[in-house]
Image 1 (cartoon, rainbow, N blue to C red):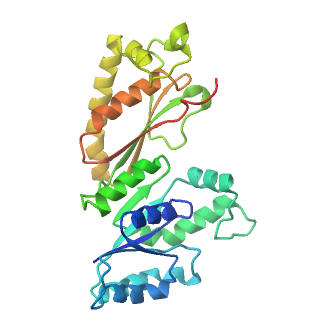
Image 2: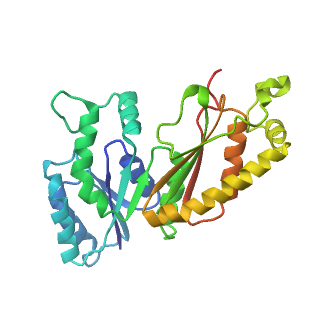
Image 3: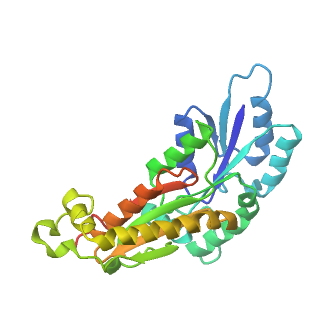
Length: 288
């Protein structure tokens, strides 16, 4: 029997993860009051139980006794019930944006009703739980399909967890830097397809644009050096304990050169298998 405890920051993607686990065949119970967690675990391992895979979602809004979660997990351990903790997270900027888009109220109220303070307080409450998590997924730049792929790989195929999740993002400098970028590379030194009439309204996803960008020898040289540097950094980031790396590649408008190079870097890194990898084109559909 495999039991997964799904928790994390409000707005971090817990509900989405629970839905995906349910679709993958897990028996899911969401927002279970914390004191009932040991009882739920005992039922799962009782004689005659046919449930082989289960997930329980614990949300800070579910019960005022959320602070007792450590005791509940200890009770599971004392009953020799094994479990794994999946912690869903996102950057503060992402959480703020998601709350503003949905106009939802944060489950933790602080004096003055400032959203940033509510998020900060929630992080403090969940710090200990996050520290003992088996898996930490940062969904700030993670596409839904990439999240599903990672969950399936770990909780369905039982493959090893990639402790580092790498997000490659193409963007346009005219729209500003991605706020969560760790490494930023400027490819505006490459010839710009925007000034060629037949390529102007296309993007790096179109073969004509990609062929044009790759036709210059400095493009391949740059990608070789970039790949070499990133490949050197990755194991050192893993050694440091970093769990999320955002590589941002920018050109002027984020439609031609940055998209082409981001695709190239993704293709160079995608078969390594020792880390999770996602690709996002941030401004490819932005109107000029």
